Image (tube, rainbow, N blue to C red; front, side, top):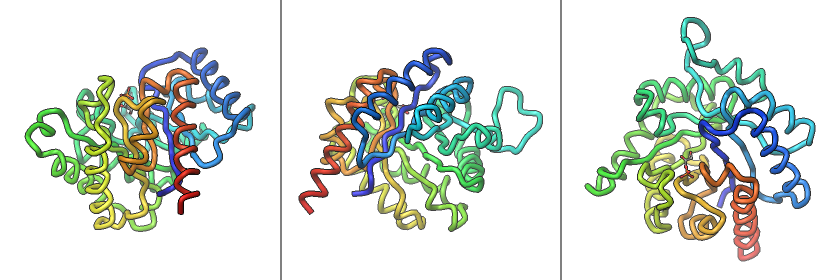
Length: 261
Ligand code: 13P
């Protein structure tokens, strides 16, 4: 098992004052009881990044900063968008790429996902490539082929030296924000497919995360039985207690598995 990674995707929630409060609460909880084995990242809205970065720096926190999206172009006439260089200046070291909400609601197709992924890793930042099928693909038994196609189209053109910067998040759309997490067996099946495809694409070392209605209660079972390396968390990342509970579950599982080896 790889070292676990837990990423909190705050989506379009929390203004900068609320974001500062949450960051302080997370920092205090992790200072009181540091996470020994788990890497932690938060992905606030763009307008909160500067404030959250300041809190993390002041608290000397190990929590890293992610953006939820970036435009693949360098600069210019892209009203409403933000560039990778702008994010780097703010201390952002992770970027979510191709979240299903961007693919579905903001016309992010596979070509734009691939261009964005390439922009992020060429800059030296870590990219979290989000993949996942919708409910009808799940019902039709097409889920593995849908997700494999998303993976291949995003990774095929990637330079070899950038591949170590890729993490993959499997987020079935039907499990996002529904309170209906995928079952550990379903996650295990997809994690196996993803790892096989990643190896074939030269990214065999990439961490594979799961996202979709993850909570402090189901995290341990998904991590162990689902065979993933951590989580991309939405709703449960908006409260410090529930977010840190997921981090603790990863820490405990990793320590337990390490002891058994
Ligand atoms: P929920 O944890 O709210 O289901 O959201 C998952 C997600 O989309 C994270 O990117």
